[in-house]
Amino acid sequence: MSKDKKRKKEPPHPKPLPKGERVKKPRRDITRLPMAAPNMRIGLLGGSFNPPHTAHLEISLTALKRLRLDQVWWLVTPGNPLKDPSKLASLDARVEAAREMARHPRIAVTGFEAGSGSAYTIDLLTALKRRFPGVSFVWLMGADNLAEFHRWRAWEEIFALMPIAVLDRPGFRLKARAGRAAQRFAVYQVDESDAGGLARLEPPAWSILTHTLSGLSSTEVRAKKAKKKKAKGKDKGNDKKSKKKAKRH
Image (cartoon, rainbow, N blue to C red; front, side, top):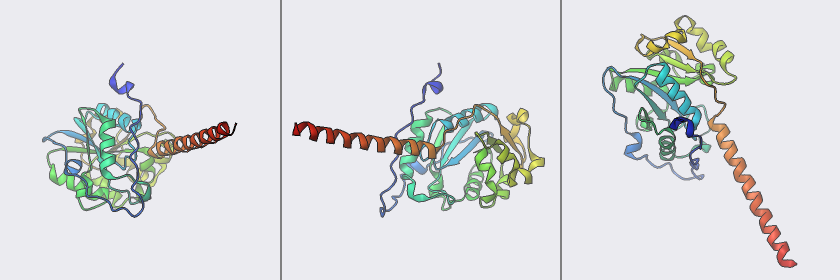
């Protein structure tokens, strides 16, 4: 059995910052970019990774194989403009948790976006293209993101900037295909049988990849951990009550 199949235990969920506490400047090793050489094919998977989980790993391994990539970079965002930041753990904690989850020679994790001066994907991808002009980048995202991609800033420019690979997600296949972004760029869709050459295509070019579906999401992982914590608290309370009763007798 491979190491990837053995790894099922989720890393500890990084704790959100207490209310009123200022966000600390991330360490240099957190925002440092991975090394890249000209002509490499690199997949970019962005997200809050709050927390990272095995579905992130599954998507990355699928992309490495199906798109014939040299590497996949996990771009851990300091925050998502479309999500509530109050439940977000620190960037340092999320990057460290993502590195613990990835543990693969061809998957690199960085919080580079925190030092780029922008919270928007279009600015991040533009900066990476400028810094690595000889690299063939592919933007990786789940079908759930494609379904609402038209809500992202400059989403049409992202399509024109680099090829996009959409990884299927449970319950979103039809929604993604019927979404505004998929309809707008329908004529540029590449059949997944030809996805191995997607990284070298001139954008706009995109493809949907079917693979082993995982229903895991960061929201679900957080909810499960919160439920376990609550149940553990009740058990402790019941133990204290039992001990008090025992003393009375």
